[in-house]
Length: 379
Image (cartoon, rainbow, N blue to C red; front, side, top):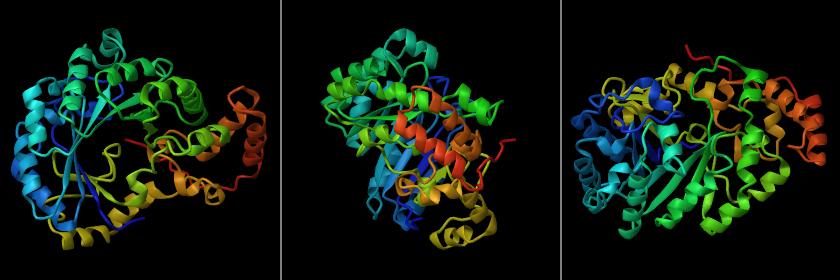
């Protein structure tokens, strides 16, 4: 793990103008009045500057709803340590060209626009609103203004075979870079292990996505990648070879290089693990020395250890260990490594896996040593 914090992720507000059915934040409600106090936000930015953070990432809810967004962008760029402010947004409000330009003039350095669907009907099913035209206008505005931006998309069972239509719409509007994540159930599921894996088959989802690889390359000219979600053993060896150079690095929990704050100044290891507060800014720490002291405390170390170790001793000898590190820790909230191996072995009789890989998976299941699994329950 790295000791250098180079990214700070800050939830500005719980308010949102959409109601996405896969959103991790929906359990917290969408109270537009639940937003981060501006003075507290300034103090977090000062702290980030003190410890040498490179990227400040604003999330929500919908961060563009934050009433003093332009002010905090100006404040960030006034700090002595150079930081790059970014936002993860649905982009709808950027339909307003002047608002879009104002944020860029305030040196908003990078924007991630989350795509939702290929047509008004799909948009409504996913978000409860038809926002297709406003979002595509926003993408066009960002393109015309020469902003640095990426269009991202969550791949689900419902869009895995049609997502290229969504990508093509965005490309025609001016988008040139695309990233993808695979959906992982954001809630504590009513089923676990084999039942969960059969209900939410990760190998089938990845296979459906990759079946569109040719068209995706044609539309994007190859400018796309997959953000980290599934462990790499979800894929076949043939698929991994085909994805060389297209898989982003393992998540920041493993590297220890990010801070994540909610609107109440709680510090979390990740915005998925909101039951695992590491401390609170302004109470447990406010300076770099206080933060170093917090990191040495048993609670802090225990929570991170429970999340950032490998799901199995078998992973130690896996040739993909350095580029995988066990995949997203949230994945293992739904199943043990043993259950995953049993599930993969069950797939050996299907056409999802090629013959050489079937044999290797059967050998793996037979020889895998005892494991220490990440199976923490949410209350």
